[in-house]
Image (tube, rainbow, N blue to C red; front, side, top):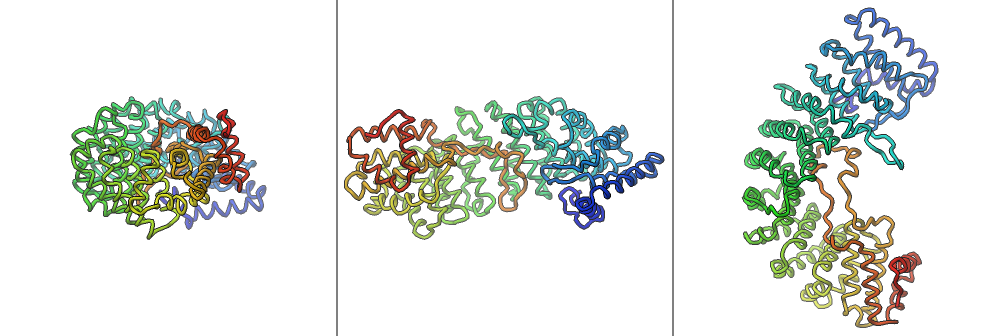
Length: 610
């Protein structure tokens, strides 16, 4: 099964024969097609005379068709071009459909598996009516006793559920969506979990991948079967936790739980309580047994549930009791745990920072940050955590720790001035200024060393914006921070030198705003590539695709950062008429695009440079 599914059976005689046929068709298409078609006809006639004794003839005939009918295909997308001289649909109607309609699933299992493979391979060539007619037949084959047949059936259903067609405006849409699959959900999940519940060969990754895909496709139609599916998934989790063997199966199992949580709790956060009641017992077992393969998954789903928790629900007893062990140093030693644990601590801060501070855990969180930022391998996680600290921890709690935090960041900057670290630290500076103001930024840094705030701005931050423009949420954060530097920092206008820094900061802000690829303020959604992404296990850290969340906007109150920038500049210009046009010219003169972008921003806002 693995060899055939993953295309790694390159050495088999069957595969090599098909490759030879395809090569011959490229050189001698008409002759090869004619000869092979005659053999296909002869084999099918032999099968018709004696179906029981000659089933191998039909199997070989289907494989011959697979050899001559395909002109172009990809593992993920299926067949995109066929041989015009081969009537694939007539062959399907006469030989494939009839095989799948056979009531007795135990008859000719090898031929049935090959017929299902044919359906999966040519899924793009079928009409919508074909697909709707095939779905109940494929679901029926999930109950076959043959491992090959029910595995191929699950894989074929999963591939059909990921098929896309051209929709309005050239946007790809699902060929078989939620409304299409809804009538089949009960039978589909009964068939899939019938395999999962078997005594032997039940950890079938193709079956669990199909569960995941069916749940994702169902979306709004999943509610009636949610309880049943969740019960089955938690039983399966309890079983594999005792002896994890198949990492791919385990990954799709947790992806299935994550997509179920997302589908149900995003519509109604009050449903998180039911999920917590069902999932906490097996999750606690995993954590107590210290099942290393599963702990990153558990942390990700716990974070997902906590994020969906109603805003007024607080942390609750279970989450409160779970928090102290999460700061245990040994947990953070495992590289695979770090991204998931960081996300979970962020979720705790987002939902209950005041509770965590009140329980005396803030110092422990700062210790975690210091450990993470010291290593290049975990510095991204360190800044994810730091952003949540600045966003959610009360200012009076954070204030006494700020000097130490800035010193840790600057020591790292001295020893590791990599482009990535500069990007991370300058994005943090912008966030800090957005939350606390530019004067707080200057005060903190100047307390460490006089003039350090402006020195970092000129030597680290602004040079970064010339070569590495931020995008999406980071772009918005930078604009908010730079707006405050430009418009709320009298020290920058004190003399000719600082005014030059002001002009450079303006150029940086305008460069971000006018960057066509900035997508300012938008977050990359997990749905953007839900089907294109080859979701699966990764030995380093297996990120659960369906448990991811878009980056949190730290400034939701700022709807249009570009407009706020222009309005703030206009206010500043009006306070000292005539002073700023020369500074603007000095900052933007080197790039006509920046000048045009600046003028366009003021024009759109209906304002003038004074």
